[in-house]
Length: 169
Image (cartoon, rainbow, N blue to C red; front, side, top):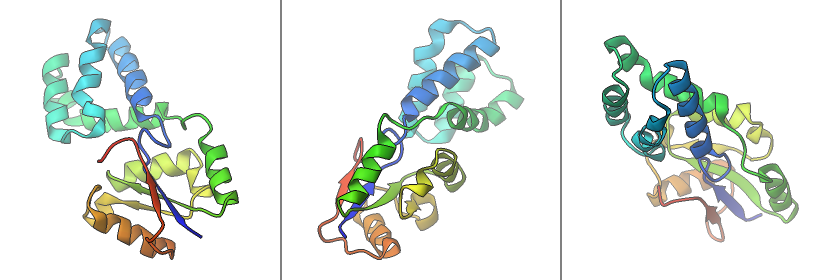
């Protein structure tokens, strides 16, 4: 069966919408100016920016206390998990792929606790044969070695595999 490698964030799950929803809630809870929404979303950098940079930008933007600043990335990650949803028809697409002989397998950059929660909380673990998180293997996409590791874990050849994702990272 050919291997279908799938990105997680903004491919199977709508991380961008989750960040936007968290930011709106966070600003409302703080009674902060809602016009800061776009700046808060931009500071996140679609999850691709180094977390210390995100924390520094959010601290300055929102005038966070030292305690709030120390916890802002934890707060952001929890908010993403709370608001995260599958993209439309993700489960149906995975079932269809499997019905057509593909072996679905997630390859994602990120940290294990966050990515594992996304996969298990949304039930994706029931629709894929497994997943590789860059944090575990010490290799990030687009480095081809992470795809080799995924193929080995899936017990499938990399020849003929297809990768679906939203970006090169």
